Length: 137
Image (cartoon, rainbow, N blue to C red; front, side, top):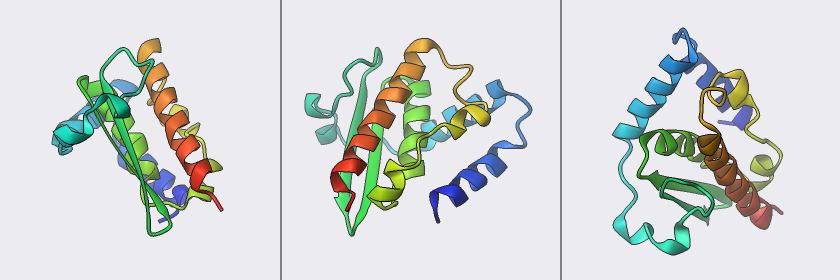
């Protein structure tokens, strides 16, 4: 599924929710169901510096595609970081590098995050983007 198709699918999945708070609650519920990152991956080398919450980010490149996983001690941070990781995982590096997460605002996800959580989201995107650029042909 292309990123454009993933974006359409995500919009359709979020459309039944009447407001941003309901969408965020749904994302948090998704985060609760997400398996935790293994303890071996929750090390300082994988910490996202600049995020007030503890946030770990693990990128992988295999079979010509990028894969991302994350974990946080904050459910909201885990939810939004996990959303980005899920959205971009399995995609070719060149496609990721050219598709910033601007659509999250249109979906009503970023407006109701605190400045610190928006900063954490931006930091995860920077890591995803940098990793994709490293692996783009």
